[in-house]
Amino acid sequence: MSSQLFPVLLFLIALACVPFLIRWLKARVPSSSRLGGAQSRFVSAVAVGPHQRVVTVEVGPAHDRVWLTLGVSASGIQCLHTSAAPVDDASHDEVSALPGGAV
Image (cartoon, rainbow, N blue to C red; front, side, top):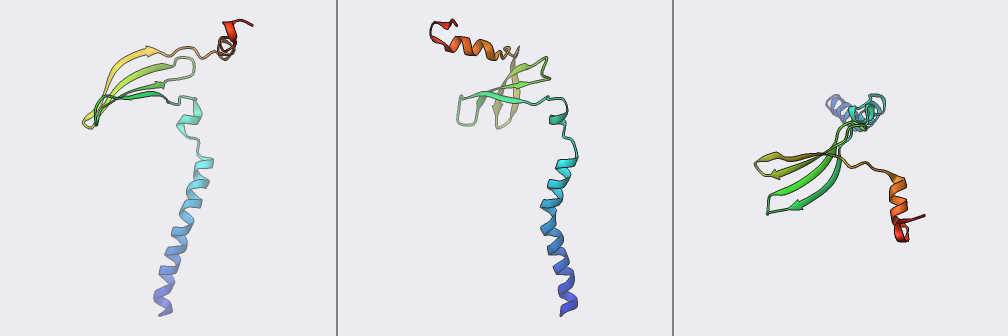
């Protein structure tokens, strides 16, 4: 009986170690999103039907960001419009947040 139980026990131990192994590998292998900062960012979404949406995402490297307006449905995704992403200037946002827009 114990000779049949041993392989099962080893398999369960190996299965329990898989999440730790994955976490260890993720910490040591650089991912593509961390390398160049070329991360996509969700901007907005508007539902235009029960299974259709118009979604705007920001993609590209930090110096050349682009907004893509995409039509998303159950049958596929289609690019509707492409434009340069607006410049995100933190100092401009702080000034415009003050009453009258002045310092």
